[in-house]
Length: 254
Ligand code: IPE
Ligand code: IPE
Ligand code: MG
Image 1 (spheres, rainbow, N blue to C red):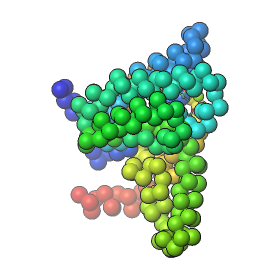
Image 2: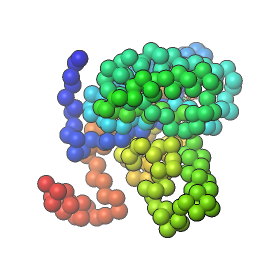
Image 3: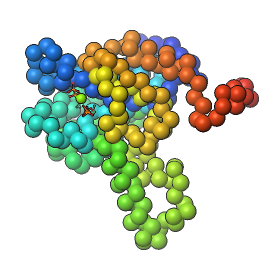
Image 4: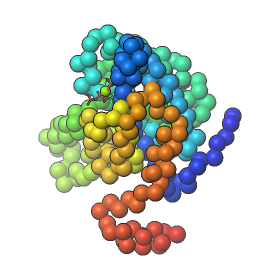
C-alpha cells in the first residue's frame, strides 16, 4: 500500500472536513449532458476527495450527498442519485475497508428507498472496523430537522422524567443528533459557486472555517482540496478569545 506523508502537521490540519458537493447539474448542462451524468462524474470526485483526505491524515470527512430538500427534484434525477449511491457503496467498499475507513450516515436513512438503504447499511457493516478515518454521508439530511428531532426526543424523555432540563447542555443535546459520533466541523467547503449552507451541519459547523469555491463539484481535484487545507492551516482559530490569549494558550501547551 502506498503511504503518503501528510503535508501538514496534525496541530494545524483540520480534524473534521465537511463538503457541500454542489454543481454536478451545471457541470453536465454546460456540456449538453443530462444532469444525471454530472452526478456520475461527481462520484469520481468523491473518490478523489476521500483518497486525498485519507492521505492527508484527515480523521473525519463528511459529504453532503443528498439533502432532505433534494426530494423535491424530478423523480428521474432522484432515482439516478439513489442508484449512484448503491453503485458507490458496492464499488468502493473493498477499498474503504482496506484503508481502514469507517462509513457512517447522518440524516434520515429510513427515508431512503429500501435498495439504497440496504446498500448503505451493508457498506457501514462491512467497514465497521475502520479506525483510520470516518467517512460520513449526509443522506436525506437537513440540519434544522436534525436539531428539531433532537429537541423532540429530549422533550419526550423529559416528560417521562428521564431527563432534567438542567442536564441539557450542548454536548448532551448533540448526543441526540444523527451527527453524535462526529466532532465539530473544522473546515467546511462548498463547491459550485454559491456562498450558502443549504441547511448543512448548522449546529456542528458553529466555528468552522468556511470556504466557497467557484468550481463545479466534478472539477474539484486533489490540488484544490490541498489548497483549502493549506489555507486552513494558516488560520488563527480564536473561538471568541483575543489573539494574545490564543498565543499564550498555544505557548503553554508546548
Ligand atoms: C449537487 O449538485 C449534488 C446534489 C444536490 C445531489 P447539483 O445537482 O445541485 O448541481 P447544480 O447545483 O444544479 O449545478
Ligand atoms: C446542497 O445543494 C445539497 C447537496 C449538495 C447535497 P443544493 O443544490 O441542493 O442547494 P441549493 O438548492 O442550491 O441551496
Ligand atoms: Mg446545486
